[in-house]
Length: 141
Image (cartoon, rainbow, N blue to C red; front, top):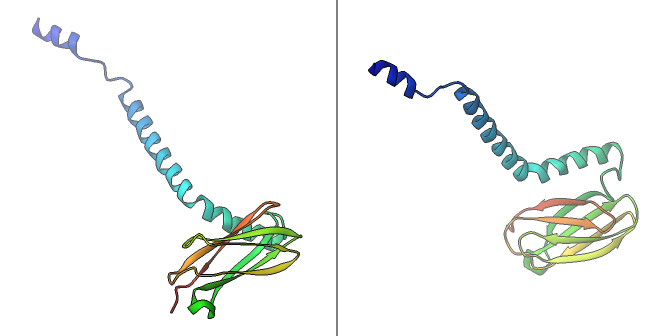
């Protein structure tokens, strides 16, 4: 009799494995989303560089950006060289200091960001007609 009561009270375990698999899939999905949110912009920029090498202007107006530190302003200035596929207004923004500079490029142009500081940083250039690129510069020696 006691054995029959225990069998009656025992909960069925059907579907337990399915729930465990669902929880694992949810955890994997959360991890993948976090990775994509973190690495997404970098992957998108690499993709744009590749497509622009094959067909200039296919990923926005900006085709190339480079940044290098100059001797002016005690070495705290960064010259940003921008190449575009067609005439466009562009804005360069420094990640460290927040310094910005704007200009209109027809094919290639450069802007100087003054007083960006001693540390290494990244300059992001955005075009009004669409597209953005980033370039890094080294720390002051």
